[in-house]
Image (tube, rainbow, N blue to C red; front, side, top):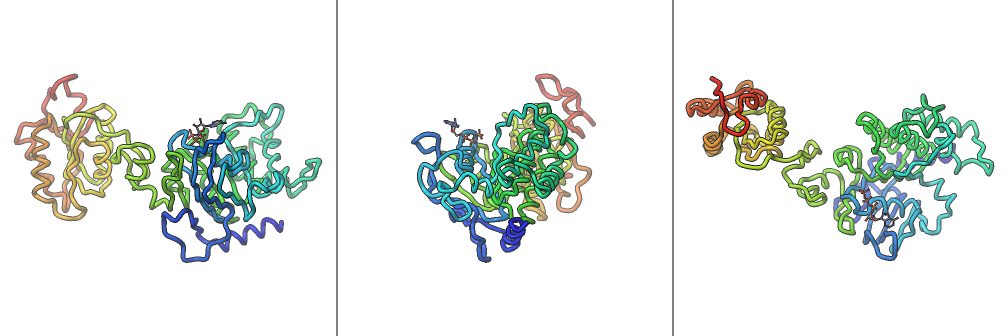
Length: 417
Ligand SMILES: Nc1ncnc2c1ncn2[C@@H]1O[C@H](COP(=O)(O)OP(=O)(O)OP(=O)(O)O)[C@@H](O)[C@H]1O
């Protein structure tokens, strides 16, 4: 148990760790713990030609680092290099303070566990047999498990939610169940550095959250460091302490999630329209329907979300306003509306914004009013409803009501009083 205790102390000493990275973000005031992984000027690739180069990355004990970037950018290649499956092309790579190239396989296996997307065949093996393989770096030549090893296996299987499946034929488990078993195998290896390639693949949303919470707990309580690639950027935003963005053969930028998950950075990394990414929710929307607005939606305080999404799904371009900029409807309208009229939060709505909204209403075939009322600073929006009625523009109370009465290809057929 000495090994575990020492590691736990390393985690405690680490506190809330922060990687040095390449300096794109600020630095912690606390003395940094000795890094478990340190790359300087590292180049990785499959042949002589580097795929990603100039990689400066530091991972401290207890830290969860996410690699994000488009398909084929080299995240797996970097992880395979860290795991020792590929040799670095140039630069330095140090693991637990030692040159990674000089680490014997057995030594590396006592420091690092890795899980990639390939699956072991597992013919004639049970789920527990597969997980037990994670203890082999610590067993003797014969591979006999001690009571302590078995306890570690049981604890890891329980933590990963596969203890109940221990006797199942591994080859006949579902993809998600196998993924959880392989995570248990990696965890029972008690790595100081856990290397995971797309660990959330195959997992349902509940299992994804459970797994990421488990990793965070291990990082916090035992000082285990994690470096993983993630395609779900909203999960990376929530689970990682540090995020490295890989694209165009380099680490485009790296930093704490608050620094990375901003619309311009994510839009540039994935070639997205800036408006479609919401840093507040960490989510990506499908985007606005094309064309001039046909409907004007009066909403606010989250009352418009269903209507916005329904119109977007049906390909109906819409405008909305006047919305407070950081109201949930204001944020969503920025992504889904052809035109959103916004006002500063908690301030009286500016007459210019109201005039703009009235002009948009005049160009629409219908108004959908989702708002229950117009309290406080939203009071002037009541005038928009009156304006629509005075203009003879039909008013509906939901997207469904509007879509039902709309002529298939023309303007709205039946006005609502
Ligand atoms: N064994 C290999 N030999 C040669 N090239 C390879 C090999 N494996 C991957 N590549 C290439 O290296 C590039 C980077 O692949 P890699 O799997 O590292 O990207 P990734 O960022 O993990 O992608 P994804 O998000 O799609 O999983 C790709 O162009 C890929 O075709």
